[in-house]
Length: 111
Image: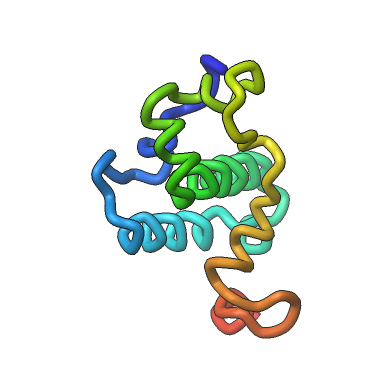
């Protein structure tokens, strides 16, 4: 777990960020690193997944409280906390931007 960056750092926000500002920061980075916008760029794909994981945890009140208290150890499995490993960054992207297959905001911007 030492290789994971702080989720607040990943999203470029402070620890007292509001839900709206958190969503705004996520949207900006998700669009920037989306694999469709960065074809064949594995580092962008990795960053997209990292941003999705950070948002998945920080946007959920219970996960955020656990993360604030225990850091990444909250999701290591042994502490009984929620697991952050089972998310799909594309599901999170669709949830935030809307659309499930046809015509979300991303499709409007990038075809």
